[in-house]
Length: 259
DNA sequence: ATGTCGATACTTTATCGA
Image (cartoon, rainbow, N blue to C red; front, top):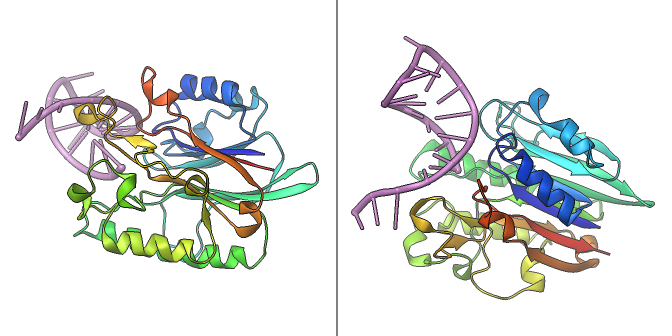
């Protein structure tokens, strides 16, 4: 089963490019982030026409996540537990059932958190603590589980073009990386790093300052695998091609193949 | 040093978020 994740930075603006990629890559599951539309205005039909089931958690203007799946989606939850007052659409989870096997998949849009001296960063760390608690609860089920998405976390210095210039950024601060490691250390495997040790393997390039042309990128989109999922991991790779096309998202898809 | 993009609204440019 091929599971991909892609922050598309507005699904409506990007619909043609996203559909092109889906047709070519044929993921079984695609986790979308930053759809930037309300649930009711999500282009469901376009993806159903490509053979996908759709589960969406949207909001106006910002954020928004979705699951696309060739196989049935059940047991959908659209909020990260732990704060009933959190109105930001950043989490959707469902169970994908294919050929008698089940995979629980979450599409995650973790808060950016910049600037770090504001409540935005406090919210990011609180969100990560909630994610850790929920991830621990999910791990106790001993299922094939994939937590995929835009984590807005640069795990290691080799995951950013110039780490020295990012030490105070919310994506790379000591506290951010420590919170990410706490989640990993519950028992998750970073799918990409289990397969590929190459530095400068990026999933995001800023629109500004020719970042794409200069390969000044970040690795911030991740697939975290439960032990049961990691045992089935065959492949994980970043598909850079969409980033070089017309009207691209600033992120590009990353995908993993599970046996 | 600078450079971008998308959504929104008391819109035709400014503001926010990234």
